[in-house]
Structure formats: structure tokens, C-alpha cells
Length: 213
Image: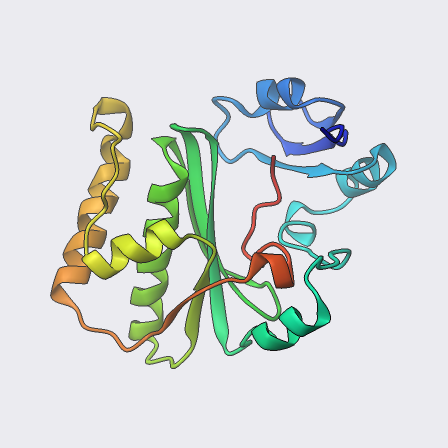
């Protein structure tokens, strides 16, 4: 079994900001902190340098990614369609604090962001992100496609339902109100937008990735 690579965590917004050398210390700074901003890095120097910059300058960056697929496989998959937006979600726990966002695939400019919600799951966030993207593109009469790295969310959108096992309670009431609105939108709107699975093994993390643990 290969040894797990050590990570360092930069916290831009949290109970305490700074660089932390383990996930538990990082998690303590972001738990129950609205709008927490954090990301992992492979070295202490990289994490320290990032702390001096802006959170959104580092989220979703994949410049160092090198695919392990063969040249033939990469050729078959091809390159991403940059006439698109990319969506993703992040959840600290399952369930846990969750947020989602959408970005321009090429420039990684953030187009929308929602959360953090106090209790949610990654699948719910991925589902909501796709529907949010669909509504945005329809409103703007755009022919762009949507990339997501969640097959589960794609399935839920096609079935026009959020098939989560998370039970409703007072803590996630606001989130489920948003889920209900999303399901209602799917049932009452038609769209021509194509939803495509992001090829992570070929292209690296999806541009909307929050860059977390």
C-alpha cells in the first residue's frame, strides 16, 4: 500500500487563518464558520505563498496535472469544449457543511455560488449546481454546455428528482426549500442544454472544483 502524501491546508477565512499541517486542525477552523475559505497544497511553501494571495486565485487551478492515461486514450477523449460552464460542490462531511458553484470552463471566472448550507451532501450540491446552471443558461439564451463530474447528479436531473437519503429537519430546511424549487423548475421547464461528464482522468479536476480535501 502506498503511503498517503502529506498535505498542508491554507485557511483564508475561518476561526483562525493561516497554514495548518493536518486536516483536523484545518477542519477546526472552518467548522461552524460561514463563508470559510480553505484549500490543500502539497507543500508548506506553496500553502504559505497562497495565504498571501486570494482564495479564488487558487481554487480550480490544475496547471500541474499530468494524466496517467495513454496518448491513445487521451486522443480518443479529446479536449474539453470551452463553450461551456463547469459546476461542482464541496461538502465537509456527509452530511456536513456544503456549498456549490459554477464557473466559465476556460477562464474559471465564477458565475454563481451558493452556500455554505449547514447540513447537506455532495450529491445534493452537485444536483443543485446543475439545475442552477441550466436555469442560468436558459435565462441568457445560451448554447453553452454544462460539465459536471457527478454521474449521480446527472441521473437525478434526467429523472427530475433529488433522490437523496438525507432526512429533512430544521437544520437543513433552507437547503431542501432550494431542492424543492430545483425539482419544480425541472418539471416545469424545457431546455436544450447538453449536460456532459467531465473527464477527470484526462483533464484533471473540474474547473469549478473547490480544491479541498
